Length: 384
Ligand SMILES: [Zn+2]
Image (cartoon, rainbow, N blue to C red):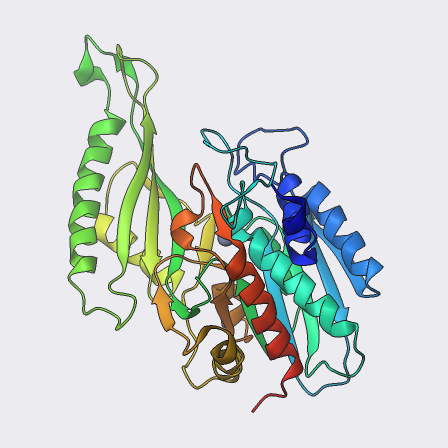
């Protein structure tokens, strides 16, 4: 970690963000200073205020803040720059998760790539442009939100609270490619119930796990059917996967309950309700089966290639990184929520998604610097 590298303010900002743990508890009963977005939110709030930006802080749950800064440039269009504050957990990492070490031109740590590098690039680009009054070509809303890694409640809360913009960028590691389309995701549980009995007298009970076995066979068949559908040109086919199962109390008791968790990836335009209805039709009159409401539903998105945000961002990329790659991705992001709420939003940022959530998560500083210049270009060039 050379002091020379840290003389760069964008790197220093990223290092600060990585040194403040912001692990998403993801439904587990975790508490302690490493968890939630509270501390990092306070840092981002004071960073924005220090640069004279109006800030609103709004919690979707205790300790789960969205930090939203507003810059009115008197422009005709408003651009949303959004990045999430949370990270996945840091167990099993082979590098120090929160010391922001720099090795061979890359900064290491949990969240370095997903997605604190994007957040640092957005914050640094905006505040440097603001040092020269009159250069902003857009009104800017900079949103640092909670809980993207689990239930997207930060972005949902921001939209419910009235967030509006003409177009947006959700910062995620895309290697500076423009991701203008991605799949959505719907997750929900299916339960079966039965009747408990001593395992020595199984015919006195009703086995909920056997019932679930029949459900699983139908779901596996349905998953194969989905993958046989005509593929979207860049996103392929929808998918379904059963990822979790639990049931029974003890091996000597006929189980009276079983529960599975389904992950269904949707194509842009597919509705969560329809995906769930297809499963309930498939299960039909299944005795003792219950389909729960989804606990997560994020739409896919497909922003047209000629949309203002795609064209403006492409023009900002060209002098920095050459002809931009414009593509689709299979993962879901907050951009799906904004786009379906009428804010065409693409995904863009430094780092490689293949390094996100890994044991040696890192981001190349060269990409961080390139992202800063690209966002500065975007912010200072009037829309075509
Ligand atoms: Zn992310």
